[in-house]
Amino acid sequence: MYRIGQEEINAVANAINEKSLFKVNDKLQYAKKAEEKMCSLMGAKYGILMTSGHAALEAALVAAGIGPGDEVIVPAYTYIATAMAVVAAGAIPVICDINDTLTLDPAAFEAKITKNTKAVMPVHIQGFPCKMDEICDIAKKHNIVVIEDACQADGAKYKGKRLGTWGDAGAYSFNFFKIITAGEGGGLVTDNREIFENSLIYHDSSAIAYFGKQMEDFKATSFCGKEYRTNDISAAILDAQFDRLDGIIADLKKNQMALREKLAPYCTFAPSNDIEGDLGTTIAIAFETEEAARKFATYEGVKCGLPIDTGKHVYTNWSCIMEKRGALNPLMDPFKFEANKDIVPNYTHDMCKKSLDILSRNVYVAINPDWTKQELEERANALIAGLKA
Ligand SMILES: *Cc1c(COP(=O)(O)O)cnc(C)c1O
Image 1 (cartoon, rainbow, N blue to C red):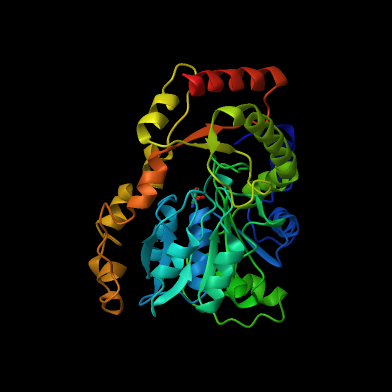
Image 2: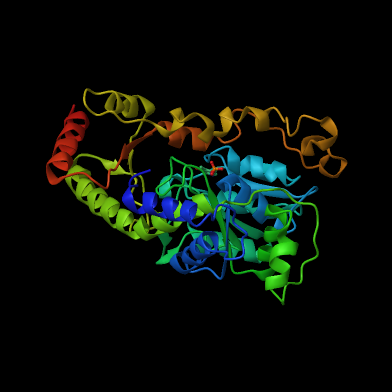
């Protein structure tokens, strides 16, 4: 969360004054407006606001027809929700190495493809763009669905096109820790009508009743889904947050680029697939060894962290995935499904050693869009002192 204030207060006050709390009301106001805004901002045909990013990922997978018997490739470095969404769809996550960009390695992804692979989930972690053209080309060649996890990349781009709109579907998160927020929240975008209609049904058990009437060309048949609908208060907040998004990104980029320029003589940055499109929340500095990375991160005044220490973002800490506990009831556990019996991998601590090495040799510098010139200067000086030490 970076900026929130009077606009959001006004939006919530309006929603309450108008008694517009439920997404699906006769006026269909804030949620509809915010969904349309999300679509036009991102450049997507269809968009659905949901309760979380996880919900949007799960809905996209289910809507794309992913389920038992299917392998879904996920990177070794992402929030555990990416892998959990795969299990929620009844499929099996296959964990794949990242490269020096800290995002999915296209070559490693291609090497993991089997006859059972049905989808890949590139994750734009920290707003670092994945190499989407190459990933989409590989996926197309092998007839694999691409579900982008853009939960840490609301508004970021690759080659000028918003992340989340490269694949068959994309998911955003608006939880408190993301660049824009409603406290909790998520969004799905897609240009694919079938994914859109099935997601609509999956995320809202009454979808047909409410939306079927309004969309004469609605073709999908209803099935038992979940209840992941947003509410109009959250949507009102997001409507205001979407208006701030490009301003926040512009200020993040300005400070990120200014800081990179100051640090450049003293360090090596992790390579980027597209530094222009990168969200600007983070600068990753790459070191030769973990020892050098830790020495810098703990130097007085540096106050930075290593991605290897970020808990549930590293596959080795995904305990319920690694230990294959896919559900409380064993009969509902995809790891125990008959359809999955030949595809459940042997998850080991060392299976993505290359990723662990990369995550141990990088240090993250967080960017603030609201730094004054002097604050940026002070931050640069503290970091340079640590790099020179
Ligand atoms: C935050 C996040 C999610 C899930 O978002 P929620 O809205 O908390 O469900 C998924 N993937 C990644 C990479 C995330 O950072």
